[in-house]
Amino acid sequence: MREPEFKVVDPRRRFLLWFVPPLAVFVTGLVVLLISGHITGPFRSVTVVRALFASKRDFFQDEQVKRILMARGYQVHVTPIGSRDLADKPDLDSYHFVFPSGHVANEHVKTRRAGKHAVPYRPFFTPVVLATFREYAEALVRAGAATPAGQGPQPLYYNLKMAEFTKLADKRWSEYGLTNGNRVIAQSPDPCKAYSGATLVGFFATAFGDEPPQTVEAAEELARKVKPFVDAQGQAGEDMAPKYFVPEGRTHAVIAVIYEHQYIAYQLRQKTFDTERVLLYPEKQHQSTPELISFTPEGDRIGELMMNDPDLRRRAVELGFHSLSWNGESADDFGTYIAGRGLPEPPAGDKGRVELPKAELFERMLDVVGDCK
Image (cartoon, rainbow, N blue to C red; front, side, top):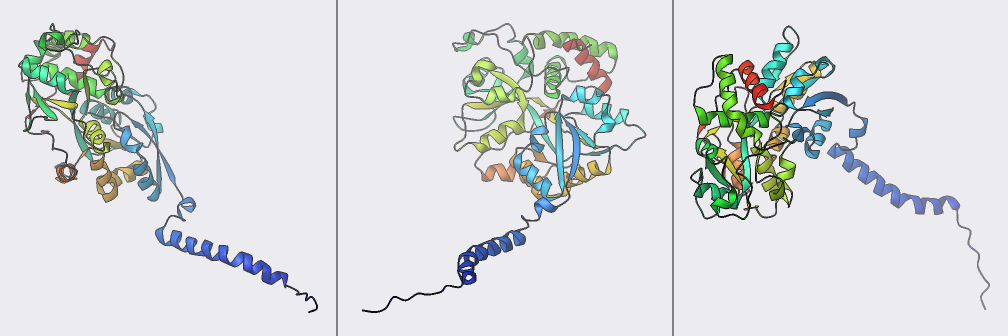
Protein backbone atom coordinates (compact mmCIF):
# COMPACT_ATOMS: atom_id res chain seq x y z
CA MET A 1 0.00 0.00 0.00
CA ARG A 2 1.37 3.38 -1.04
CA GLU A 3 1.63 6.11 1.45
CA PRO A 4 -0.74 9.08 0.80
CA GLU A 5 0.89 12.04 -0.86
CA PHE A 6 0.26 15.63 -0.04
CA LYS A 7 0.90 18.35 -2.66
CA VAL A 8 1.41 21.96 -1.80
CA VAL A 9 -0.15 24.27 -4.43
CA ASP A 10 1.24 27.76 -4.75
CA PRO A 11 -1.80 30.10 -4.29
CA ARG A 12 -0.34 32.56 -6.75
CA ARG A 13 -0.35 29.88 -9.43
CA ARG A 14 -4.00 28.99 -8.66
CA PHE A 15 -4.91 32.68 -8.96
CA LEU A 16 -3.16 33.00 -12.30
CA LEU A 17 -4.88 29.87 -13.64
CA TRP A 18 -8.24 31.46 -12.79
CA PHE A 19 -7.44 35.01 -13.83
CA VAL A 20 -5.44 34.70 -17.07
CA PRO A 21 -8.22 33.31 -19.38
CA PRO A 22 -10.75 36.06 -18.55
CA LEU A 23 -7.99 38.64 -18.79
CA ALA A 24 -7.12 37.43 -22.28
CA VAL A 25 -10.77 37.72 -23.34
CA PHE A 26 -10.98 41.23 -21.86
CA VAL A 27 -7.81 42.41 -23.57
CA THR A 28 -8.93 40.98 -26.92
CA GLY A 29 -12.30 42.72 -26.62
CA LEU A 30 -10.66 45.99 -25.60
CA VAL A 31 -8.41 45.91 -28.66
CA VAL A 32 -11.40 45.28 -30.94
CA LEU A 33 -13.35 48.18 -29.41
CA LEU A 34 -10.39 50.51 -29.64
CA ILE A 35 -9.87 49.64 -33.30
CA SER A 36 -13.57 50.16 -34.08
CA GLY A 37 -13.66 53.45 -32.18
CA HIS A 38 -16.57 52.44 -29.94
CA ILE A 39 -14.67 52.45 -26.66
CA THR A 40 -13.69 56.09 -26.99
CA GLY A 41 -17.28 57.27 -27.38
CA PRO A 42 -18.05 57.73 -23.67
CA PHE A 43 -14.81 59.66 -23.21
CA ARG A 44 -15.31 62.12 -26.04
CA SER A 45 -16.50 65.59 -25.28
CA VAL A 46 -20.06 65.94 -26.52
CA THR A 47 -21.57 69.31 -27.41
CA VAL A 48 -25.27 69.55 -26.64
CA VAL A 49 -27.08 71.66 -29.24
CA ARG A 50 -30.56 73.01 -28.50
CA ALA A 51 -32.98 73.41 -31.40
CA LEU A 52 -36.63 74.07 -32.21
CA PHE A 53 -38.18 71.66 -34.73
CA ALA A 54 -41.38 71.55 -36.70
CA SER A 55 -42.47 68.43 -38.62
CA LYS A 56 -38.92 67.38 -39.63
CA ARG A 57 -38.01 66.60 -36.04
CA ASP A 58 -38.42 62.90 -36.86
CA PHE A 59 -35.10 63.08 -38.71
CA PHE A 60 -33.18 64.16 -35.61
CA GLN A 61 -35.14 61.73 -33.43
CA ASP A 62 -34.03 58.79 -35.58
CA GLU A 63 -31.71 56.51 -33.61
CA GLN A 64 -29.20 56.14 -36.44
CA VAL A 65 -29.02 59.92 -36.89
CA LYS A 66 -28.43 60.29 -33.16
CA ARG A 67 -25.56 57.79 -33.28
CA ILE A 68 -23.97 59.48 -36.30
CA LEU A 69 -24.10 62.89 -34.63
CA MET A 70 -22.79 61.47 -31.36
CA ALA A 71 -19.85 59.99 -33.24
CA ARG A 72 -19.15 63.50 -34.57
CA GLY A 73 -19.31 64.90 -31.02
CA TYR A 74 -22.82 66.39 -31.02
CA GLN A 75 -26.12 65.69 -29.34
CA VAL A 76 -29.15 67.61 -30.58
CA HIS A 77 -31.80 68.35 -27.97
CA VAL A 78 -35.14 68.45 -29.82
CA THR A 79 -37.96 70.79 -28.80
CA PRO A 80 -41.01 70.09 -31.01
CA ILE A 81 -43.24 72.97 -32.08
CA GLY A 82 -45.43 73.94 -35.05
CA SER A 83 -43.79 76.03 -37.76
CA ARG A 84 -45.84 79.13 -37.15
CA ASP A 85 -45.47 78.97 -33.37
CA LEU A 86 -41.75 78.45 -33.91
CA ALA A 87 -41.44 81.58 -36.01
CA ASP A 88 -43.22 83.64 -33.34
CA LYS A 89 -41.47 82.16 -30.30
CA PRO A 90 -40.09 85.02 -28.19
CA ASP A 91 -36.93 83.27 -26.94
CA LEU A 92 -35.34 82.25 -30.25
CA ASP A 93 -31.96 83.52 -29.04
CA SER A 94 -31.80 80.74 -26.46
CA TYR A 95 -31.46 78.08 -29.19
CA HIS A 96 -28.53 77.15 -31.42
CA PHE A 97 -30.70 76.66 -34.49
CA VAL A 98 -34.30 76.22 -35.66
CA PHE A 99 -35.76 73.96 -38.35
CA PRO A 100 -39.18 75.19 -39.56
CA SER A 101 -40.91 73.32 -42.37
CA GLY A 102 -41.73 75.96 -44.97
CA HIS A 103 -41.02 79.28 -46.58
CA VAL A 104 -43.41 81.41 -44.52
CA ALA A 105 -41.83 80.43 -41.21
CA ASN A 106 -38.35 80.49 -42.75
CA GLU A 107 -38.73 84.07 -43.92
CA HIS A 108 -40.33 85.20 -40.68
CA VAL A 109 -37.43 83.80 -38.64
CA LYS A 110 -34.84 85.43 -40.89
CA THR A 111 -36.67 88.76 -40.67
CA ARG A 112 -36.63 88.56 -36.89
CA ARG A 113 -32.91 87.73 -36.97
CA ALA A 114 -32.00 90.70 -39.17
CA GLY A 115 -28.57 91.98 -38.14
CA LYS A 116 -27.84 88.82 -36.13
CA HIS A 117 -26.19 85.50 -36.92
CA ALA A 118 -28.66 83.62 -39.17
CA VAL A 119 -27.16 81.13 -41.63
CA PRO A 120 -29.61 78.96 -43.64
CA TYR A 121 -28.92 75.40 -44.81
CA ARG A 122 -31.22 73.40 -47.11
CA PRO A 123 -30.24 69.73 -46.88
CA PHE A 124 -33.36 68.14 -48.40
CA PHE A 125 -36.98 68.58 -49.48
CA THR A 126 -40.17 66.55 -49.38
CA PRO A 127 -43.49 67.12 -51.18
CA VAL A 128 -46.69 67.69 -49.26
CA VAL A 129 -49.18 64.98 -50.28
CA LEU A 130 -52.64 63.67 -49.50
CA ALA A 131 -52.49 60.12 -48.18
CA THR A 132 -55.46 57.84 -48.56
CA PHE A 133 -56.49 54.21 -49.06
CA ARG A 134 -56.86 52.44 -52.37
CA GLU A 135 -60.65 52.16 -52.36
CA TYR A 136 -60.95 55.91 -51.74
CA ALA A 137 -58.44 56.75 -54.47
CA GLU A 138 -60.41 54.55 -56.89
CA ALA A 139 -63.62 56.28 -55.79
CA LEU A 140 -62.00 59.60 -56.71
CA VAL A 141 -61.08 58.13 -60.10
CA ARG A 142 -64.73 57.20 -60.64
CA ALA A 143 -65.72 60.73 -59.61
CA GLY A 144 -63.37 62.22 -62.21
CA ALA A 145 -61.11 63.87 -59.63
CA ALA A 146 -58.08 61.55 -59.80
CA THR A 147 -56.08 59.49 -62.26
CA PRO A 148 -53.46 56.76 -61.59
CA ALA A 149 -49.88 58.01 -61.83
CA GLY A 150 -48.20 54.86 -63.05
CA GLN A 151 -48.77 51.52 -64.66
CA GLY A 152 -50.08 48.29 -63.22
CA PRO A 153 -53.27 47.19 -61.49
CA GLN A 154 -52.23 48.54 -58.07
CA PRO A 155 -50.51 51.92 -58.46
CA LEU A 156 -49.27 53.53 -55.25
CA TYR A 157 -49.59 57.09 -56.59
CA TYR A 158 -52.45 59.09 -58.11
CA ASN A 159 -52.72 62.59 -59.56
CA LEU A 160 -55.45 64.72 -57.99
CA LYS A 161 -57.36 67.47 -59.81
CA MET A 162 -58.06 70.03 -57.09
CA ALA A 163 -60.74 71.86 -59.09
CA GLU A 164 -62.68 68.60 -59.48
CA PHE A 165 -62.00 67.61 -55.88
CA THR A 166 -63.61 70.81 -54.57
CA LYS A 167 -66.77 69.93 -56.50
CA LEU A 168 -67.13 66.84 -54.31
CA ALA A 169 -67.34 68.81 -51.07
CA ASP A 170 -71.09 68.21 -50.76
CA LYS A 171 -70.86 64.59 -51.90
CA ARG A 172 -70.58 61.48 -49.78
CA TRP A 173 -68.33 58.49 -50.32
CA SER A 174 -71.39 56.23 -50.52
CA GLU A 175 -72.31 57.96 -53.79
CA TYR A 176 -69.18 56.42 -55.35
CA GLY A 177 -69.65 52.81 -54.35
CA LEU A 178 -68.30 52.82 -50.78
CA THR A 179 -70.09 51.99 -47.53
CA ASN A 180 -68.74 55.15 -45.85
CA GLY A 181 -71.50 57.73 -45.66
CA ASN A 182 -69.24 60.61 -44.61
CA ARG A 183 -68.55 63.67 -46.75
CA VAL A 184 -65.64 63.74 -49.18
CA ILE A 185 -63.10 65.86 -47.32
CA ALA A 186 -59.37 66.03 -46.65
CA GLN A 187 -58.09 66.37 -43.10
CA SER A 188 -54.98 68.26 -42.09
CA PRO A 189 -53.27 69.70 -39.04
CA ASP A 190 -54.25 73.20 -37.93
CA PRO A 191 -53.19 75.63 -40.71
CA CYS A 192 -52.49 78.22 -38.02
CA LYS A 193 -49.76 76.04 -36.54
CA ALA A 194 -48.57 73.38 -38.99
CA TYR A 195 -47.05 73.94 -42.41
CA SER A 196 -48.75 70.90 -43.94
CA GLY A 197 -52.11 72.34 -42.87
CA ALA A 198 -51.17 75.68 -44.40
CA THR A 199 -50.19 73.95 -47.64
CA LEU A 200 -53.67 72.45 -47.93
CA VAL A 201 -54.93 76.04 -48.06
CA GLY A 202 -52.53 76.58 -50.97
CA PHE A 203 -53.79 73.44 -52.73
CA PHE A 204 -57.42 74.52 -52.48
CA ALA A 205 -56.47 78.00 -53.67
CA THR A 206 -55.28 76.53 -57.00
CA ALA A 207 -58.88 75.46 -57.69
CA PHE A 208 -59.77 79.14 -58.07
CA GLY A 209 -56.92 80.26 -60.33
CA ASP A 210 -53.23 79.79 -61.02
CA GLU A 211 -52.00 83.24 -60.08
CA PRO A 212 -51.30 83.96 -56.40
CA PRO A 213 -52.87 87.11 -54.98
CA GLN A 214 -50.77 90.27 -55.09
CA THR A 215 -52.65 92.42 -52.61
CA VAL A 216 -54.08 91.99 -49.10
CA GLU A 217 -57.60 92.44 -50.46
CA ALA A 218 -57.11 89.72 -53.08
CA ALA A 219 -55.57 87.39 -50.50
CA GLU A 220 -58.53 87.83 -48.17
CA GLU A 221 -61.03 87.26 -50.99
CA LEU A 222 -59.29 84.05 -52.05
CA ALA A 223 -59.10 82.89 -48.43
CA ARG A 224 -62.86 83.29 -48.02
CA LYS A 225 -63.37 80.98 -51.02
CA VAL A 226 -61.05 78.37 -49.54
CA LYS A 227 -62.32 78.57 -45.97
CA PRO A 228 -65.43 76.31 -46.36
CA PHE A 229 -63.29 73.43 -47.61
CA VAL A 230 -60.96 73.65 -44.63
CA ASP A 231 -63.80 74.19 -42.15
CA ALA A 232 -65.48 71.03 -43.42
CA GLN A 233 -62.97 68.83 -41.62
CA GLY A 234 -64.06 70.13 -38.22
CA GLN A 235 -61.58 70.32 -35.38
CA ALA A 236 -58.08 70.25 -36.84
CA GLY A 237 -55.61 67.92 -35.17
CA GLU A 238 -51.87 67.56 -34.93
CA ASP A 239 -49.57 65.62 -37.25
CA MET A 240 -51.87 63.35 -39.27
CA ALA A 241 -49.26 60.69 -40.14
CA PRO A 242 -49.39 58.74 -36.84
CA LYS A 243 -53.17 58.38 -37.21
CA TYR A 244 -52.98 57.43 -40.87
CA PHE A 245 -50.40 54.67 -40.47
CA VAL A 246 -52.00 52.78 -37.58
CA PRO A 247 -54.01 49.65 -38.50
CA GLU A 248 -57.30 51.46 -37.84
CA GLY A 249 -56.21 54.46 -39.93
CA ARG A 250 -59.42 54.50 -41.97
CA THR A 251 -61.41 55.38 -38.86
CA HIS A 252 -59.29 58.49 -38.21
CA ALA A 253 -58.99 60.05 -41.67
CA VAL A 254 -59.57 58.59 -45.11
CA ILE A 255 -57.63 61.46 -46.72
CA ALA A 256 -54.85 62.90 -44.57
CA VAL A 257 -52.37 65.65 -45.42
CA ILE A 258 -48.88 64.39 -44.67
CA TYR A 259 -45.34 64.65 -46.06
CA GLU A 260 -44.12 62.26 -48.74
CA HIS A 261 -41.06 61.27 -46.70
CA GLN A 262 -43.33 59.87 -43.97
CA TYR A 263 -45.00 57.56 -46.49
CA ILE A 264 -41.74 56.48 -48.16
CA ALA A 265 -40.11 55.73 -44.80
CA TYR A 266 -43.18 53.74 -43.75
CA GLN A 267 -43.13 51.64 -46.93
CA LEU A 268 -39.39 50.95 -46.65
CA ARG A 269 -39.91 49.59 -43.12
CA GLN A 270 -42.42 46.97 -44.31
CA LYS A 271 -41.44 43.40 -45.15
CA THR A 272 -43.76 43.68 -48.16
CA PHE A 273 -45.06 47.00 -49.45
CA ASP A 274 -48.46 48.12 -48.23
CA THR A 275 -50.53 48.34 -51.41
CA GLU A 276 -53.65 49.53 -49.57
CA ARG A 277 -52.14 52.87 -48.57
CA VAL A 278 -51.59 55.23 -51.51
CA LEU A 279 -50.74 58.87 -52.16
CA LEU A 280 -52.63 61.62 -54.00
CA TYR A 281 -50.45 64.26 -55.68
CA PRO A 282 -52.26 67.49 -56.53
CA GLU A 283 -51.57 68.51 -60.12
CA LYS A 284 -50.02 71.64 -58.68
CA GLN A 285 -47.55 70.16 -56.22
CA HIS A 286 -45.79 71.81 -53.34
CA GLN A 287 -42.40 70.79 -52.02
CA SER A 288 -41.61 71.58 -48.42
CA THR A 289 -37.99 72.72 -48.34
CA PRO A 290 -37.18 73.18 -44.66
CA GLU A 291 -34.30 75.43 -43.75
CA LEU A 292 -31.99 74.74 -40.86
CA ILE A 293 -31.39 78.32 -39.73
CA SER A 294 -28.34 78.54 -37.50
CA PHE A 295 -27.88 81.19 -34.82
CA THR A 296 -24.50 80.05 -33.46
CA PRO A 297 -21.23 78.35 -34.52
CA GLU A 298 -22.59 75.11 -33.02
CA GLY A 299 -25.65 75.43 -35.21
CA ASP A 300 -23.40 76.12 -38.20
CA ARG A 301 -21.59 72.86 -37.54
CA ILE A 302 -24.83 70.85 -37.54
CA GLY A 303 -25.87 72.56 -40.79
CA GLU A 304 -22.52 71.77 -42.41
CA LEU A 305 -22.79 68.14 -41.32
CA MET A 306 -26.29 67.95 -42.80
CA MET A 307 -24.96 69.21 -46.13
CA ASN A 308 -21.63 67.34 -46.23
CA ASP A 309 -21.63 64.24 -44.05
CA PRO A 310 -22.19 61.18 -46.30
CA ASP A 311 -23.68 59.10 -43.48
CA LEU A 312 -26.25 61.76 -42.59
CA ARG A 313 -27.14 62.35 -46.23
CA ARG A 314 -27.52 58.61 -46.82
CA ARG A 315 -29.75 58.31 -43.78
CA ALA A 316 -31.90 61.21 -44.98
CA VAL A 317 -32.60 59.33 -48.21
CA GLU A 318 -33.36 56.15 -46.26
CA LEU A 319 -35.92 58.17 -44.29
CA GLY A 320 -37.62 59.25 -47.52
CA PHE A 321 -36.15 62.70 -48.15
CA HIS A 322 -34.91 64.07 -51.49
CA SER A 323 -31.41 65.36 -50.82
CA LEU A 324 -30.24 68.76 -52.06
CA SER A 325 -26.77 70.01 -52.94
CA TRP A 326 -25.24 73.32 -51.91
CA ASN A 327 -26.52 74.97 -55.09
CA GLY A 328 -30.07 73.78 -54.39
CA GLU A 329 -30.19 71.09 -57.07
CA SER A 330 -31.69 67.73 -56.17
CA ALA A 331 -29.48 64.67 -56.37
CA ASP A 332 -30.49 61.38 -57.98
CA ASP A 333 -29.73 59.28 -54.90
CA PHE A 334 -33.38 59.26 -53.77
CA GLY A 335 -34.68 57.62 -56.95
CA THR A 336 -31.73 55.26 -57.12
CA TYR A 337 -32.18 54.15 -53.52
CA ILE A 338 -35.91 53.47 -53.52
CA ALA A 339 -35.72 51.81 -56.94
CA GLY A 340 -33.06 49.53 -55.50
CA ARG A 341 -35.51 48.61 -52.74
CA GLY A 342 -38.22 47.86 -55.32
CA LEU A 343 -40.42 50.85 -54.50
CA PRO A 344 -41.75 52.84 -57.49
CA GLU A 345 -40.46 56.40 -57.69
CA PRO A 346 -43.18 58.97 -56.89
CA PRO A 347 -44.24 61.55 -59.49
CA ALA A 348 -42.74 64.40 -57.46
CA GLY A 349 -41.69 67.22 -59.72
CA ASP A 350 -43.44 65.84 -62.81
CA LYS A 351 -46.20 68.44 -62.62
CA GLY A 352 -46.35 72.15 -61.92
CA ARG A 353 -45.70 73.66 -58.53
CA VAL A 354 -48.08 75.51 -56.25
CA GLU A 355 -46.86 79.07 -56.30
CA LEU A 356 -47.74 80.26 -52.82
CA PRO A 357 -48.32 83.98 -52.25
CA LYS A 358 -45.68 86.15 -50.65
CA ALA A 359 -45.15 85.28 -47.02
CA GLU A 360 -47.07 88.24 -45.58
CA LEU A 361 -50.04 87.67 -47.93
CA PHE A 362 -50.10 83.94 -47.28
CA GLU A 363 -50.08 84.60 -43.54
CA ARG A 364 -53.10 86.83 -44.00
CA MET A 365 -54.84 84.04 -45.91
CA LEU A 366 -54.13 81.63 -43.08
CA ASP A 367 -55.51 84.11 -40.56
CA VAL A 368 -58.78 84.31 -42.50
CA VAL A 369 -59.07 80.57 -43.22
CA GLY A 370 -58.06 79.33 -39.80
CA ASP A 371 -59.34 82.20 -37.63
CA CYS A 372 -55.79 82.32 -36.33
CA LYS A 373 -55.96 85.74 -34.73
